[in-house]
Amino acid sequence: MDRERLRTVVALLSVLSLPILLLVAAPAVAQTPTAGKPKVDRLVMGLITPYLDYVRPWINGTADHNIQHDPMLEWLVEVDAETGQYKPWLADSWTLGANGRSWRVKLHKGVQFHHGYGEFTAQDVVHTHALWCDPTYPGRKDPPVSGYRAGICQVQKIEVVSAHEITMHCKVVCLDMPFYYSSASNLMIFSKKQWDAEGEMGYDRKPAGTGPYIFKERQLGRYVLYERAPTPHWKHGVVDWKEIKMTWTLEESTRFAQLIAGETHLTEVNKDLTDELVTKGYKLIRSRTTAQQMQINFGGLYFGTEDKVTGRYTEYGGTTGKFDPKLPWANVKVRQAMNKAINRKELLKVLYKGRANPMYVHGFYPDLEGWDPTWEKRFPAMYGYDPAAAKRLLAEAGYPKGFKAKAWLYPFAGAPEMIAVMEAVALQLREVGIEIALEEADWVAAVRPKLQKREASGYLWAVPPSKKAVEAQLAVFNVGKGIGHIFQTDEIYKMWEELLQITDAKARDAQLRKIGNYKFEHFETIPLFDVFIEVVVDPKIVADWPFPGWDGGDVGHTWRITACKQEKPCK
Image (cartoon, rainbow, N blue to C red; front, top):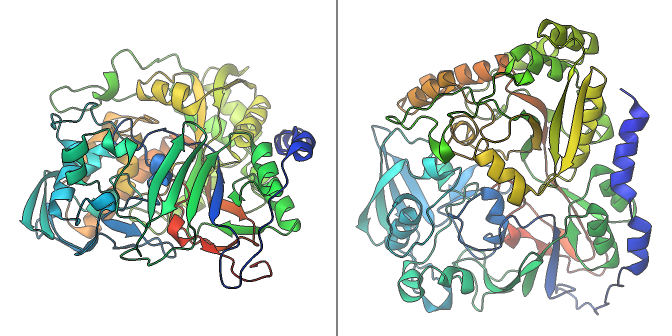
């Protein structure tokens, strides 16, 4: 493709309005540092989008909302910041039952909720589970909706053994319970006593968590402010910052200017601006593990058929009348052609500066179950850049002159390159005759509702799904349990149902590999890259921030943000 056009896309995104913003940005307020102490009392985070402006995660829930819960609430299981492995948190241990359908969980003793709501016990786990899984839970106004709800509610009943021990009883084989009850998911633990005393809205007015920070105030769409808990945290002791302020700014150039001006102390920007900041002395911190998969999805691949008896594909209005057989990419040859029109090497070089890894199949990772090492070898022939082959496939599919379609453009937390990626892909598709009209849209207000109701036919849409358990990826994106509905077929649904009956690890691995190959061979998406989340910090203020990258899909582990306590910047 025309490399200069691609560079122009990046340049416009990087520098548009930047000189003006830098001229008007307020100067940073100097504070005299004290040896061995943070240089500021309030850490200000310059984030991209808040997703939702309330605390309750079960209402139109998404794990991308987790960053707002991260400082003040806690989960049963932690995704380790350094390794990405599951480790104890509010749960000290979890043991799988012999039949794969139960878990014995021992809870940590002595953990106190904020605001005097007492000790964390089994009743809080029972209550939190019911908020998600009991359709008629007393006092809950809105029905729970979340991509992870199906997995969370694989646990059918929680039996209280004692104040700090429970048994989870599942309706299917539930080997991924540690994922669904971890910080990668959005089932953080709420206080039953607060619910009883204040009702549902108490959680939004003054949520009582068990984390090292306490909710202080919110200004809708602008920021949330937290303050350090008055007593040392049960696990982390005394954290560095007296306050953490999360701010949200969609415009990338504004986030850049805010960091330069000292209005924020860390932010996310594209690779060009990141590298510019590093040359100015700022510090780049990457997620410790792969965080996301950048991909382009084909809107409208609703091949699956409803079955109201079993509940197959009946969520969010079902599939009846939603599939359009005239949709060009309903033809597998068109999907392959569009993949072969993409010059991934150029995108990797220009947009990601080489700081990403190849992606082969949505939802599958080399270090998780179901991985097939042959995908890497087969990928060049099936997906590799070949415009001539792309045009030939389009002609075979009945589109010798290409066709017209649309794509949504929107910013996304943890993925500052995403708009540029969609624009660049549109340019590359144009070279094989596919004209993509780009439409700016609001992800939360416009795009998510259309995806949820299966009304995305004819649209391409980019998204960077967070790393998660493979079964969870299938549930959210392939079998109708989440809002994505990226590629749904009765064959995938049947294989997923079979998966939930398998207890043997080798058989489960083989079943997931079978599903992965089905997805790979049917070109379900335009897979691009496995990526890390990159954050740029002011090294005079921030020393380090270890986070795994799959705290729900964005940054997390905010209590691990450490202050630079020396006179010189912490490089």
